[in-house]
Image (cartoon, rainbow, N blue to C red):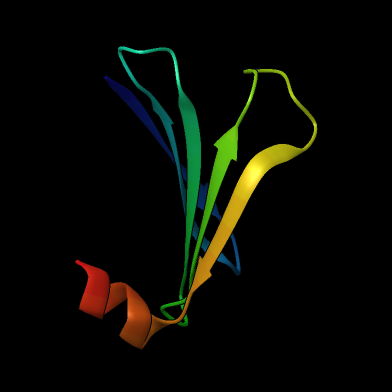
Length: 63
C-alpha cells in the first residue's frame, strides 16, 4: 500500500491511497472535520466510481 499526503491550503489534507489490489482511494480531511472519500476506477479517471461524505461526528463514529 502506498499513501501520498498533500496539503490543500485553506481546505485541509489530501491522502491518495494505492492498495496492493490496485485500488485507488482519495481521502480529503477538511479543517472543519468533514471527510470526503472517493473510490477511483482508474488512476487517471476524472470521475470517481463512488463518493462518501462524512461529518466530523459520523467519521468519529465509524472509526
